[in-house]
Amino acid sequence: MLDLRTLMTPEDADRIGPLRRLNLIMRFSYTLPFVLASICGVAYGLRYSNDYLIAILIPLDVLFLAMFVNFSNDYFDYVSGVDSEVEKERFAKLQESPVFKDNEMLKKIYWDGNQFERGLITVEQGRMVMVALVVISLVLAVPIVLHGGLLVIGLGLAGLLLAYFYTAPPVNMGARGLGEVNVGISFFALVFFSHYVLSAVFSWEILVLAAAVALAVGLMRVVDAMSGYESHLRHGEKDLAVRMGGRDQAVPVIKGIHAISFLLLAAMVLFHPVNAILLLAIPLGLKSWKVMDAKEELWYVRIAPQYFGYSLTVMVLFIVSLSVRTFLTSPIW
Image 1 (cartoon, rainbow, N blue to C red):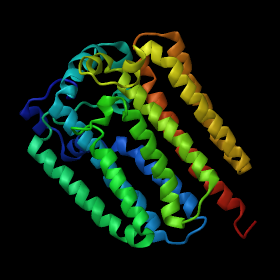
Image 2 (cartoon, one colour; image 1 turned 30 degrees about the vertical axis):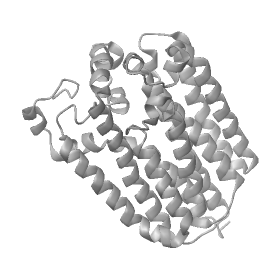
Image 3 (cartoon, rainbow, N blue to C red; image 1 turned 180 degrees about the vertical axis):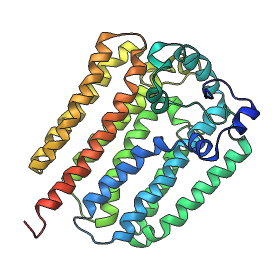
């Protein structure tokens, strides 16, 4: 089987099937947290609104924006040379480790490598893809704008700027220690404003949930960046591990932020008893603490899928909670 972690020749890239190629280029698994976050907001908003067309269009628009976020991030990382260095330092040692070598799920969740670096797409094609994603996002946003007015325009522009300047010069928020903040703000907005744009109703419950999701996904970004610590340090990129002086030094901060997210999940029970289902995500989160404390080989790689899973679990459980609440309040009961 073709090993995508070995640098591809054009002939290698040509042997990949069209669907596999599309998935590797667009990294659809990385769009899942974005879409789930918007579905959380929309699902809650449907308690106050019956506009199902807008409820469908909001997550769909978020899907294309998420593809733009991930794709533009990869594009500018490739152009800047960061991913080339990360490839040499991160995967040269990872792919030979038993932790990584025989774990296909870890490979797929963690990273498949930069699509430009792999020869799956050219820089010129990449520019065309980014333009197409923006155009599709804008077209889908038209009915949402007509529904939500100026608020949607402002949120859309803010979202595009946050996405574009995450890695794009001259701002490059990710390189200036603001990448995690960028991600946290973006996911807070995805949850809270997906609800608010649909329903125009303020709710403390969805506000708290949005904060919990923002912290969870922000931590996912922190952990994902840790394996490239040496490259980021040499390139002057100031992510959390670099600012704290090393991976080990970043652990207390990660645990502290994680604990706050646990408290927010516990607070959700105050709004409705069924929200207690959200507490099922906490044991999964605590597994990562044990790995960090054990400091086994490549512990910072081992925890990556756990933080990914924790983030997704929080959002899925909230959707389940809303479904149960709807069922309990249906007329047949």
